[in-house]
Image 1 (cartoon, rainbow, N blue to C red):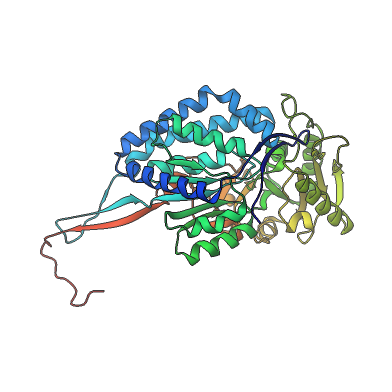
Image 2 (image 1 turned 180 degrees about the horizontal axis):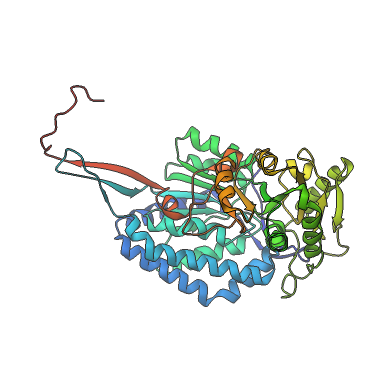
Amino acid sequence: MAVRQINSVNPATGDVVARFDPHSPAGIDAALEHASVAAGQWRSMPVPARAGHLKRAAALLRAERDRLAALITEEMGKPIAEAEAEIDKSAWCCEYYATQGPEQLLHQPVATGAARSHIAFDPLGLVLAVMPWNYPLWQVFRFAPPALLSGNGIVLKHASNVPRCALAIADIWNRAGCPAGLFTTLLVGPDAVPDLIADPRIHALTLTGSTEVGSTVAAMAARHLKPQVLELGGSDPFIVLADADIPAAAAAAVSARMLNTGQSCISAKRFIVEEAVAEEFTDAFAAGVAALTVGDPFRRDVRIGPLARSSLRDDLVDQVQRSTAAGARIVTGGTVLDGPGYFYVPAVLDQVTPTMAVAAEETFGPVAAVVSAKDCTQAVEIANTTEFGLGAALWTTDLERADRLIPGIEAGAVFVNGIVASDPRLPFGGIKRSGYGRELGVFGLRQFTNVKSVWIGPARNEQPYPLSE
């Protein structure tokens, strides 16, 4: 059913702060036509000229950091310091691709029997981006700078609870001097997505969201033979071996789980600890979590803001209740705060087994599950006992053993003695039901390109095969 209104709700108070009418079918059609024309203009622009627009977007982000961060905090509840960091990271991504991307898009010569041959990276056209609310600017800027630099246009269907962020992003690219309509935000509900995917003016799709939505959208895109990148759910393991620096691992675990109030696909969610150090780690981890301040996300001492929607808190409460009923123990937290807003006191559970809800399902909020393993082999086995495969962290002082264990960890990224994070210099994405395709790095830059082989004759003294395909 079509949405009648798109509301911006402050999750710290539950108040509606802005209302928007969704785009009509005629408005969508006009926007797509405008975007298609702009994309045609953009692809003919030299790559260094496109890079200049990325630099201007970065400058705007930095100049308007306070305003944009406050918008994020009010619209989805992120603590203000983290919202500011999100703006900084978005600007960095623009700057990275503006400086490093042009060389990575150059033709790559290949020695063949031709006089000349090379690989070219041509843009695909308009890319539909279906984006989530939890990092309302970074999720878009993680994808947009490389996609734009490689010559594509973007049509954004953002999460319906962050419409003001969605409009602010399009405004940044417009004021950065891109052709009008090159980056288009459509305020529409999920019901509009099937028709957008089917529209011949859309050439590819990227989606960050739940595994269930990703599966549905992938089937739609496949029906129309349109390439896609899917960054879906995660239940990242945080493996702590007995020889790890336990105080450092426990301190990092607090941030790894509780950043963005635990609402991140690459948050560490399952803390798999060798039994020899499980009690020491759990005590230190729980103490760090218990010290976090919960409250108004505009206060700079607050580390845990509200969940973005009441339904997310309800889901979390249910997962914790089912896990404690199965034998898990709440070490700290795990209560709903009275009063307005969607607040939940961050929790650590131990005596968790891999089949309990907080370990077997993705928890999207400030709840951590500690699972004990008898040794490093079992720790890796437990880490892999999940349908997801996004990121993984491994804590040990034996780096040679880490090198031996890494190939057996089923994830798109493994961070040793560090917190899993996205970085413009490294490819980002998952395996299994965490999705496929890559953002960031050179692979993300070329993800939405036609990798074109070019052979220019005449041939040079090379005998062709008698049969050709």
